[in-house]
Image (tube, rainbow, N blue to C red; front, top):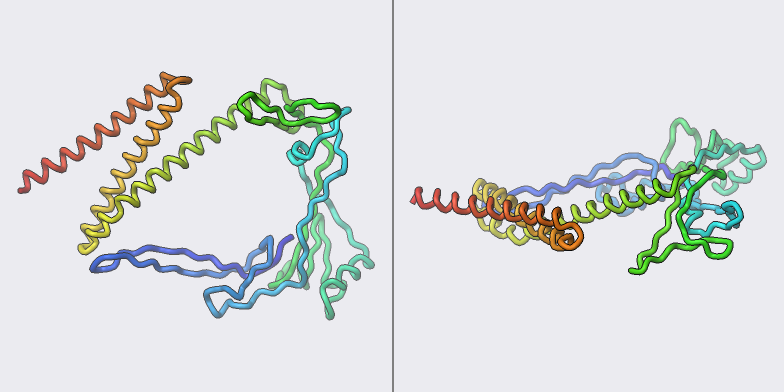
Length: 292
């Protein structure tokens, strides 16, 4: 389901104020877009766009799944059925009678000329080539029978997820005919990518946290705007290096038993980062002494 609606977007910008402190300026923009749900325009910030959105009618998204999906002599459970891909457009054709039936849902004054069908889409509105606020379009897709490959535990005439000794559950479904070796290798690769993504997110959060800890230093220096910018850049670099060192150290500790060489390399990187911070600190202290 999609509704043609006014959509509000906002962009906030933080600026430094002369004499210290910061102010946040928010700019609102409005565009006509297709949205997967009706947009409440009564809460728009700009009064000129408030209460502009209407809809001809509302229709809920729906997904109809076959009551029984078989895999050879076995019946697939829902967690495997939901993993089957290959959806394609499902063409729809509406008779004149069906158009009249749908038009009744749109209220008085809306006839069959407000109901259009093309390819896999039913369009509710005056002109599909010139949409107006409140128009709707419904797109239909189907997932046809296909060859799949699965990794799961056989139980009777169906499957369940495999449970490892540590409680971790595992199952996998791939489209087409795929060898077990390839499926396990792909699963391993996906697991590695996810692990590194989570490590990256954790590192970013640590750096952000340290930046917040050091933020008061730049706020104090904001009484002189240029000095505040310089101090902010300096504390940002320190927060980045310390956050990176701390994250790498935690990853290394977790890997000492299983990947000692990699853990050793990460610890060496931590030592190098700390040494860099120490040298920068000594350099600034020496520069301050010379100036005195």
